[in-house]
Length: 370
Ligand code: NAD
Ligand code: TYD
Image (cartoon, rainbow, N blue to C red; front, side, top):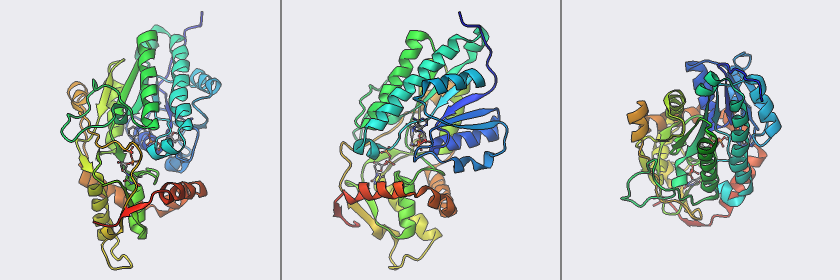
């Protein structure tokens, strides 16, 4: 039988060099401040420069590695003895999951399985009092619930799973594995399902940063379909505060929906970005407003029409509420991108340019500004 060992105050974060992970690591260091190990493969979406401010901080360690590598995960758990795992690492872009689904199954499904399985072995080796406090927090998405009609009630924790994209299906698979490790083995897991995030450090393949950069540079703004798909936007720091709340107060085995009560049609988000960029950087060469750059292009296959989150459970049971309204959060986000041209140049690698070329060249323009 394994010797019982203790944990310490360290947490193991996966995917901490990505968009939400970076914001989580930075806000963790500023608020909780206990040691944090960041296991990240540094794929195209992972950028250690996001965390450059933590260089030389003895509380922070970056380990470049793959969550699918069971030996690495095992040795990290054994050596660093975390009290919790906070699992962000994933392939996260729906359009890429349509172009090349395999990496999504590998990281999101198999990688989550490897982490759960190693966490289970580690947890079983702990002394009873440490087993009691250990948590595995799995970060997931509202996309696992599928799509809503205009008058349907928002997704709650009991909405049946109906994923429509390879990305959503891979996240649904990881959620089911997480649930199974609680029910079968008793591993103290928590799952959060969050709506669309926006804010600093988001890779400019996603709607909001892509539109900010294109608007700034006077490039076409590619709106899929009729632009009336609805997303429920949450400022990334609010997501991070929700995760800290669930980690601290959530009940093992439970799932919590997280959202910002901020449903917007894509075209309204793009128009708001145009107006903010016009205000902050007047002077498109044509003399026309940035909305003139809006370009309706071929729709995403299987494009979910509407997402909306009912976040009443986390509010009622754990006392969490978002603090940022969309208009203020969007203004902060546009300002951040306008003030971080070095960061933008850094992420616009050859591979990034190749993706943008592939995704948009293949979409036939179906109409201009309306
Ligand atoms: P992201 O794509 O910006 O970052 C993903 C990170 O995971 C990157 O740092 C990448 O290097 C790392 N990674 C990828 N494969 C890995 C592997 N095999 N091993 C180790 N690290 C690996 O993603 P994000 O937008 O920050 O999303 C983080 C999590 O939150 C994901 O699980 C995603 O499903 C979930 N989520 C995202 C949103 C959103 O709007 N962005 C909303 C709800 C939930
Ligand atoms: P995205 O940021 O990819 O997030 P998700 O697909 O996970 O919701 O897209 C948000 C919405 O914006 C979605 O309805 C697709 C749409 N969209 C565009 O209209 N044009 C684009 O160039 C992109 C990337 C997204």
